[in-house]
Structures are given as C-alpha cells and as structure tokens.
Image (cartoon, rainbow, N blue to C red; front, side):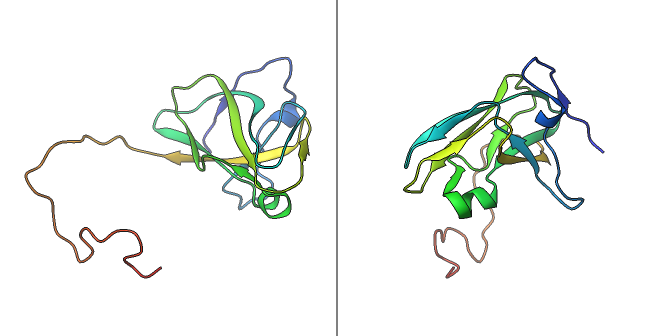
Length: 145
C-alpha cells in the first residue's frame, strides 16, 4: 500500500485524515477544517488543514462526493482538481453551490474525495505529420454520443 505523509498541525486530529469508507473505495473522503456556508451560485475555497507529501510519480485528484451533488447541488468547480507531487501547501477544495438553498458545512464534514493516480511526464516534439485514424479530426459529437 502506498503511503502519503500528512504534516501534523494543531488543528488536525486522527479524524482529520482522509479515509476510505469501504474496502473497494477508490476515493478517500476529505473533510472541512472550518465552518462556513455557501450561498446559491456561490464559489468558495474550503480549507482542509491537510498538507501532504505525495510520492513522486503520483498526483492527487480531488473529486466531488456524489451524495453532496445529488442531495445538495454541491460539487467541485474544477473537477478533477490535480495536486502535484511537489506541492506542499494546504489542500483547499473549490466548491460551488448549484442549488437555490444556502449550504452550511462544519469542521469534520466530508466535502470531497481524493484519488491517487500514477502518471508519466511526456516529451513533446514537433513532427511533420501525425498518423491518420478513422476519427482523425472529427471532434465534439462525432461519435453520436
């Protein structure tokens, strides 16, 4: 199992650590480290208190929690959000309220989930041509979906 180191600070407890709620969960829930509210159509950066050391070759993706989206209209504005392995600052979650009601949250509320993903960096170079495929340059809606 991969280890992600979390910097201890005075506002965090063991309950503040991200947690997988089931054996098959791909995403670990992360919690708010502050009380607040988000007005209808408002965008807010919610602090988690978490500063992490992600292993090299991995990124941390923040994703919405489906229950918050379905029941309260709350989702992440930039989803998935990427946290790079060389970032050491506090993780903040950019939430947006798509509902017509104020959404209140408090310290300890699960506000998003994170997924660790392995990645590779690519080398980009110019080419005189690129391969042709059946789809080629057909873009948005070209597969009738």
